[in-house]
Image (cartoon, rainbow over all chains, first blue to last red):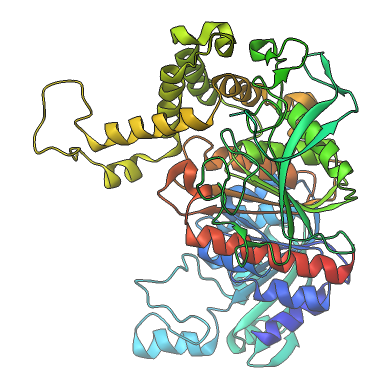
Length: 198
Length: 377
């Protein structure tokens, strides 16, 4: 978690306006508030988590990214962050489009379904993968649309979404993703972090 | 009611131009304060009361001898902790607890003003209370807070005085009264005016009181403050002090008895004309209309931080209407937080012991106070 926060924080310029979509209990918001910018908002669907955030004094709105991002004007945030949540939406494509409208830049992090440990579980055990990063069983997972680093990379190029930076994370090892190492990074990383723009 | 109430009071000498066109001056504002104002004057919270509330937010209400109307929220070691904050609450103009209202005695005639009192609005109420803040020499409030009609006043206050509060917390309210809201208020007013003792609003001249009408108004309104589930769980079809139906029109059911009781205690503490005037003020409230249909414009000059709260079972000021306020604020990039609190206690949730509400509100106010003070805005 800490590595992911660090990478996200490094992608963000100081004193900019940030929206964290699916901000959970506000850990990333708190981290960014201490390290990067005071001007940070959150959107979260769970009442309980919203209450936790508000209790910490964080500015968070209870709402659903699929329907409630519309209320923010175009380009009203310098960065919109979607941390490990894309796979939980009914319509991820719509959400990405909404994020790109609201944010000048968007940071998306993806738990990589192409990671070799994930692949091996399906290949050898024959069961849906359960890992540290994807801890749910198939019957209780909130994840509806799992994808791989390669899937997201290809999605961006097919939709003409500019990738400014793409970073792969394995344990605490950070590396850049590019066209030539894509297949390898897709196999060897548990998390992909993308800085994109329309 | 407005008879010999021993309350803190100031006389506002500045003329106040009302929305109806009339001007008032030298009028009283009754208020109460709790806690101490700190030396920087940075810990003041102005609380706005709802339709039938008054200045007695906390402690014992000296008129009713009951707990203040927001005792769950305001007091020592409560979410709005009076060990830390200086809490101010004023009776609204149009009210009957010492502020200028229809039961104020006209000094030239020696009689109550009655329905000669001018029609007032939420805007007028807020402007009058601002005079109190000036009198207390508070340059900037830490927060303005209120539920229901109190929430409407919060919105109006920030709109009128964009740099006078650091934090605004409108709770269970709306930016404009809906047809349903107006309909229920009209029902209450008609009940009062249909009472033969109303005498066109001059009942006090005849030593009368439209108690029956006012009680019916309160009964009808009280239903709107609860939820269907809450009513069903609390009362169901339970009978009142009897084992079987009596085949008559006495209060067979507990819910009937409960509403009759609510009506009867209300008439002892509230003035019928005040009920007419204040419900009218609520009906006239339409903040977006004040800004040519664009609610966002009401807030575009402000840097105030907002926290909007609604309740799941509130059908009088439902979450959708509270969300409209949030959306209007978001569309201009204002600093706004929002949560809908789970509760089956209906609109009244904001007055009651709803732990997740009390905790979230208290934690939010305290952590925001800390952050704002650290930043020394």
